[in-house]
Image (tube, rainbow, N blue to C red; front, side):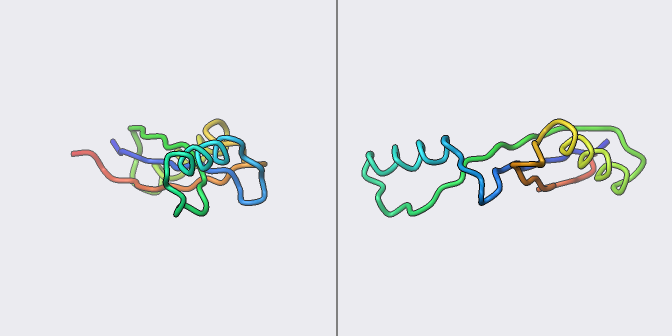
Length: 84
């Protein structure tokens, strides 16, 4: 079994209202030093696989098919490790 972490974030050229809202809120709370902010999502999952290459293939397929919208979001495998 493997534990995987997938990160998903809007692509740089896509307007993302949540990021703008959080940035504005930080500024209103006195954190004006923050210049940019990109909100995203993080998925942690465990899965059965026949090795790390198989686990990576499965996780990236899940990200491409459901966890992210590849048209407006980028995703990457943040971590993949065998479970003991």
